[in-house]
Length: 298
Image (cartoon, rainbow, N blue to C red):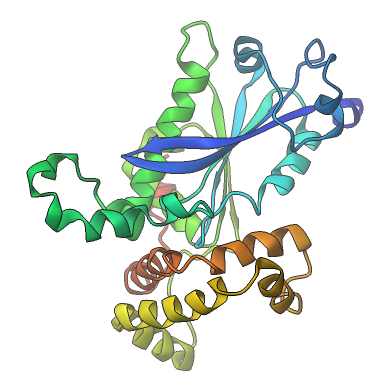
């Protein structure tokens, strides 16, 4: 269609503090026809940061795509995918996404939960100021983190009384599908705004074949051993140049930009705790049968 061909996008990446945790975010907006004309990048480089008048943008939007990632839950892998979707949908739509708490290639964000834990004994006088590590390290915590993000999106688009009520299209990947379902159980008002829920390769139950399940159960029963082993491997990778790690991953990842992000991530030993503390709880906590309770409260 003409709108799909002519559409221009403004893509921004940033950070929002949700439940005390700085979290990577992205926003993709359709640039109104009367804006961005003076910026060559507005139509030619969707990865650039473009200025869009917030009032005009929000008044035109009726549906926001909300993305919930899996584990690891980074944003960078998915932005081109959603840019393509927004080009096809055209005006009236926007997209917002948030990384999982403490899931980032930014070392400070990736190390935040471990820092909080390691320094808690030296911070007895500031107990009320400490962040809750259950947010980044548990399934329920990550679900609550997504609730906080959705509240922020609603404030962005409906904070002005003149703005219209928006609807959501939820798109989730892997364990992010479970996070989203839990968020909708906690907050039925989010589900009531849903026009569509898309689960991409969903991990919403834990029922592997017996042999694989036994292995997963062993890993889940010894999270600290699993974490320590992978921290050691990742320290070795961190000692290598990024280009060398990228070369090691070429056989398993053909996408060069995505591989570069993965290479950065595996060179952050602190991320092993974030990934496996959450991941082993996923194995122990996610239901063995499909969790359909979220579908019964619409």
